[in-house]
Structure formats: C-alpha cells, structure tokens
Length: 336
Image (cartoon, rainbow, N blue to C red; front, side, top):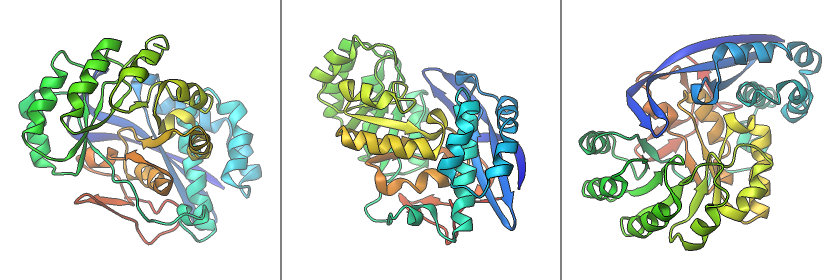
C-alpha cells in the first residue's frame, strides 16, 4: 500500500461570497491510496472557516498510515471504524481518506460505487448552481452566463427579498435560498411568505446553528420547507434536526466521509426528513464521490467543480442541466 498527498489552489471563475466572507481561491487536499494496480482518490477542501488546513489534514492521516497498511484489504466501513478513534476530531481529513478508500474498494471490485450499493441511476436529482452574494448586476450576469434549471442563491443582506425579485425577472428556473445563519426568526417567517411567491423551493439554514430557541417558531410558521446545513454536521445531529427542520443537508467533509453519510441518510429517512447532499468548493474528485449517492437523495448541491476556472480531475460531468457518469469503477475519477 502507498499513501500520497497532493495539494492544490483551486481558482474560482468568480469571487465567491457568502455571509461568512469572500474568496477567489480554495486550497484542497487530494489523498491517493495505491494497492497493486489500483489507486483510490479522495478530497477535502481546506476550509479556513472551520479551521482546516492541508497541512493539518496530512498530519492527521499520517497518524493512521500503519493501521491502513495492516488492514488495507478490509472494506472502507471497517477502516473508518479503525481510524475514527484517531481522526474523530479531524472530519475533513477522515472524509478525504474515506473517499479514497471507497474509490479503491470500487476499483478492486470492478464496479462503480453506486452499483456496489445496489443502486441504479434513475430519477436522479439535478444539482443547483450556486450564485454567491454580489451586486444584483453581477448576480444577474452569472445567471445569464450559466443557464441552469436550479439555482441556489446565497443571501444574508438587508435586501434579500429585493435581490430575489430582481433575479426572478431574468429566469424561470427554480430558486433555493441559503442564508447561512444570517436571518432572525421573524425575518425568516416573513421572507418565507414573500419568497414562496417567487418560486423559491426551500430555505437553507436561516438561523444561526445554535439558535434552538428560535427554530420552533420558524418551523411552525414558515410557508417554505426549512433545510438544516450548519445545524447538521455529524450523525448525532440528525435526530436533533428532526425537531426543527424539514430536511438536512449532509456535507461529506463535515461528517467524516461517505461511510457516516450513508448512515445519516438512513437515519433521516426513518425520521421522515428530506435529504440533501452538499459540497464545498472542490474538484471533480469530491463531486464524483457525491454523485455515487444521488439515487438516495431528494436534493443535491454538487456544483463545486462547476465554479472552478480549471478542474484538476475528470469524473462525473455536469452539463446542460444533466449528469453523465464515466464508464469507470469506484467514483469514476481520474486525476489530471
């Protein structure tokens, strides 16, 4: 077994702004695990907002290298359990590792992951394309520049409803809005009424993640579905979110990879929650892994690679509102 690390500065097509800040580049880590003629690839973005660096992820994964070498023939789920005691405080690192192990597992078994899980590619949700916070003119330009059937609009300004009204003049596509915790209770309720008339499908994370007192009022009075993002990071959050949200947005990096994400999806279904899978700003390595889970989802936000000026990998292709899977095993990704 051979363990390798590659770091990249992914350049975005445009400055990307949400309520937490702006960026033009995104550092990312690619983990490659080789066994014989097979190589598995995984990815995790080094997101400063969560205190994650490429150096920190590499150091964390190196701590479990011996465990991997001694147990590499085991399934990814077993390796996740073996490495979790060491990586439990490093979910981004565990995600990159778990993703690479799943890719390797699929290649060793000669099948794409979705087939190994007994899934088929029917009735797949289409990803939204994200429009970050900007001037209305620039947001409108991005919509015209990239026609797409579903947009996620990042909000968190004093003119949020006005922004949606202006954007609605330029497209009939479905809108989803994501406030990233920037709204208050009454603001969310009133915005939901106004946004419903503007063909907004749902509101993602309107209140701050720790505002458990405000969410009961929101869930009672919102006329739009409310989807948890920052409030749903790891497995134990799913049950808690069932009290306050209509659905959850799972991020592989935040929960620790594909292995726990599959368990979170199963738990959400038992609790009658809608399920969405989201991405960070990442390459086709991470996006192609998310795509394997599409048959299990109601919604998906996997546009990370679409936002890049230059991708570093080839895998699942998103174009013209459609998704195409490569004829390759594992996650189907190859590093360029």
